[in-house]
Length: 229
Image (cartoon, rainbow, N blue to C red):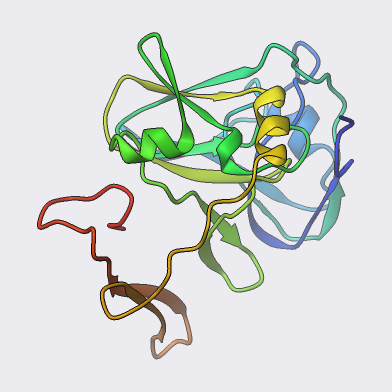
């Protein structure tokens, strides 16, 4: 498939971004992220041991790495690069990882593979095994809040919650095509034994957040990776 969409419109403010293509050798924050922006901008990455760090203009950029970009002017972001047909591997640490979508066309999280040792698990299997949390979080700039991503989009960044060390995330285009062809799982039937409700909470400053409460018949007293959030 071709790069779809070919660019991403970025609004003024904060955006979570990722590179959908492998950039030319020597590409830096300045040449690939800063230079196309018409106004002032700043770029951060995230390391669990350090936290947020401002990324210097001469830092090399890589697919699979997620970045926070702040700009004071809206613009259409694009880049030159190649589609990596061999796939992109992103190492994960236990906890939240800021990951850039390394696929160049939209796809379901079912196209991801979670690698542990020599075994590659589907996203669903990795969630059932308690290796990762099933939800991927993205940033909704319009609402100024996080949201659960039902689809991975090129040019975007995501939070991935690894529940153990020694994992990596593998993006391969053929897995995403195969996931498109498979049928979606049947929704969970809600009844007296299984229900949920989404509560939107707002503080005095108007900042909003969503809290989900509910129960599932299959839930246990311990941690259930497919149920607990």
